[in-house]
Image 1 (cartoon, helix red, strand yellow):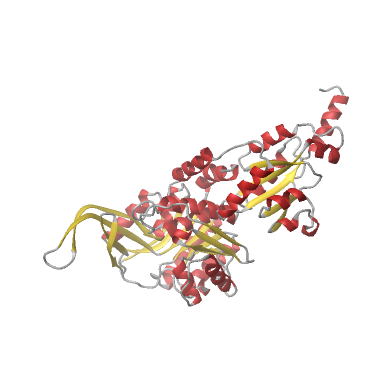
Image 2 (image 1 turned 60 degrees about the vertical axis):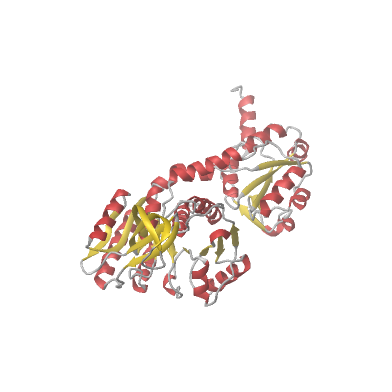
Length: 492
């Protein structure tokens, strides 16, 4: 179910983010045609050209993705003073990408990749490029440009490394130092087997082949192989997360502390995976810059990638498409104020079989207030689905006294179920949720307040326990007391 956190991010946060992209920019040219015969001159297919399309590629595609998410985007890159360079500049301007960091060099040629497609299938790719590392003067200009952006306030930095000369170890060392100094989130789309030059990045987004190159062996695309390889790398490279894109297998995130999340692909009909990695990079950095959890970032990025791979050619994700995706998921969800224990168990099993993480919290939630809402929204960010164990009226009376609850169990369940961050509510009659937890077996148990994890009831029935602080100044007991005081003073 879509939750209010995702809605807030899509509707309000994305258009206010400032993201810098540094890396190898290029033009992607697509030549579309029809193939119906073999050439009489040589045993090759004849492609009758019907359309030529030119779009931003490399770091330019990342910038285009971010721009079409309605972020404010600043590009730092190199290009030649040639026809392709002028085309590149016009494509960047069409996407309203700030090119103050684009260095144009008469001695360079603008990198261009031409893909020949016949009947929607790629037949051949032609690369036009001359690879030259950036000079010390160009490096200094990019560092000054980025430092000025950091001073004015940016939310994220993308390193888009295609091995074409921009992302040198010397430049990256200065970039990550600035990011650390100004507390800016960073993400890397890597190239090559030596990832030491990415030390200090928040996260890195290799595909399976790139991950294998880094550990020096060919990897089987299964959960265990990917996780083990990533954990091996995290022991020697200073990164917070590795976000492994796995084509039809989806995305896996491995954190420095060993936490691992697998999210299966959402799109079954795949026409073209080119550019899908750039979409994942764009979504992850915007989510992190927007203060979302990595778990939620993974969920959103996977949905965005599912949209992109259904398109032919390099295609930037649009914010309107993401909004429609999440609204369609919301329309397709089955809302129910209250589930039986048996119904909730079936839901939990179905979600977990899909690889989703189920978060559980419990409480009386008598007179729902802002503190409750904030707590539940934070709990929902820890996984894919948030379910609530709700104390029955009898349970509340035993815990709170004969005057409670103020609101009946049916009404409390209806209010909680109406929240976008809640996927289901189930009653329990006991004084603690221990029996319910043992029956449902969710993944994460969340408690609010000053608890020690080892003292939390039901911890043996879950994979992990998280303790969240309550929002100060909000309490049902205080509200009830204030109402009683006002009644006593005749103010009601």
